[in-house]
Image (cartoon, rainbow, N blue to C red; front, side, top):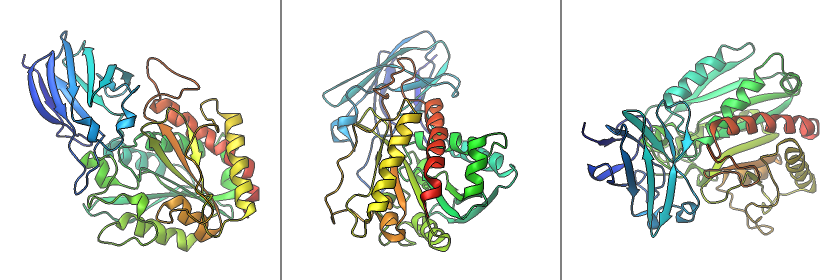
Length: 374
């Protein structure tokens, strides 16, 4: 059986350069449309049963985050349900993946994919839960729906949103964990949170980039997390729609969920450099991070991005814009593409299950500060 490599599916991204022998497969990554970003890959390797395969992904020195490749291991799955880490090495701009498959076809990816089909299943499933409403905020440039989930009866306005960068799929796995907990009628944390707040949840901010297999941008090549100061319908309708809904509801708490290519840690980035910063905001941010570190053994506060100097925050980024605009507690949660160094898992690395667990833990931490948000 001939070996083939393909990526013509939801979230797929690869360019086949050579695929004549199992031990000499050469690939590269297609750039996001209208941009120079590239790092996300997701492809199917077929006809590989029982063969020792060597897959080389080349030209990575010019990728979006070349510092993310050393120490990284690709994920592989035969059933597209359980993703394990493959034998992977990186040298001089080439990522080399070695595997021997027990199945005719295996799928390989930068992180466990979260397809648009699974996204629609999530919207449908959560939308059936008591007290939950779902609505479409508007259309993307490719004509896809931008989904919003709402629940809770309390006065505090809580916004959770993910996948501004579509290749950061761990962010929607986080959302799945958070939503499952938040809609569980038997969960005491969820019950208390629903009584204290009104939740507005956007599980996927960039459906077009997700379906197209982009790392960081939407269909226009816009990095949505640089569009929050002055979004436009032509370039970033997703931010236009979400920001309008936020202006209508107000915001007391906002969490923007991401993944970081290089740092093998879970951490939170804040808003320290915004012009309108208050001591109250800073105290809430410090308390939330400390509480989450006490709840989750996967979360830490020692390693992260350096805070901006006073008055120098980039207000095109959502966390800075929302903290400055609403005077709220806003933050960016980052999870690793690699593994969490504090609690490594040699078989799976950082994974969908651990992302989901962190989503649940972030809600438990929110409960400890929610009564101070107003």
